[in-house]
Image (tube, rainbow, N blue to C red; front, side):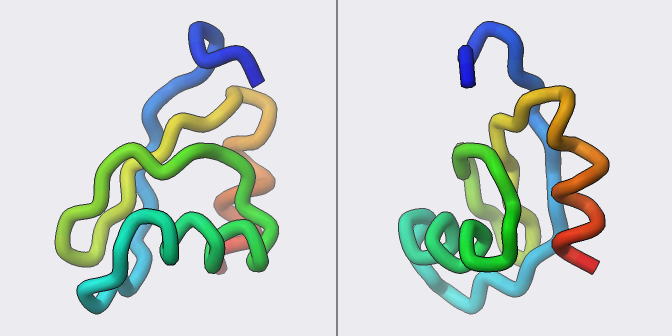
Length: 61
């Protein structure tokens, strides 16, 4: 994935004081593609390729 062709996407995810690395690993297991950029409360901001947006939303349902 080339970072210049990515967008910032926000997802609701229960973070419960976890580190961004732990959240990244859990989301990978669910099938979400992208890089965790920021974690705030129950929101995770990720750098995601445009072709993965719909697929990621389905994985988090």
